[in-house]
Length: 61
Image (cartoon, rainbow, N blue to C red; front, side, top):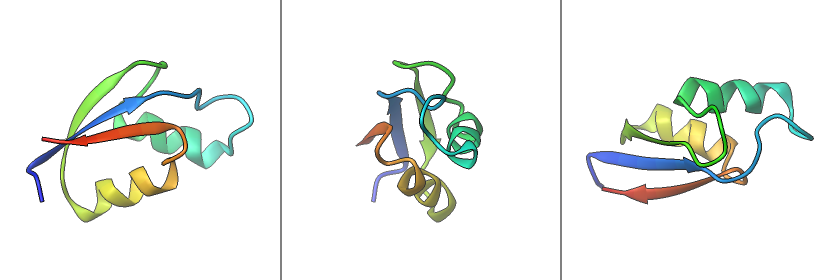
């Protein structure tokens, strides 16, 4: 596994999405479409990504 994950928001986390998924995107640091954040590669971050996998693209660094 890589040390960090680059996460990009590609779909809106506001419309037609459950509120907990919106909160998960915010907790990852994603606010707007196109935002990219780097997060450590660990189980909790991967679980958050799994929850909103239909909204994000992930790249291992």
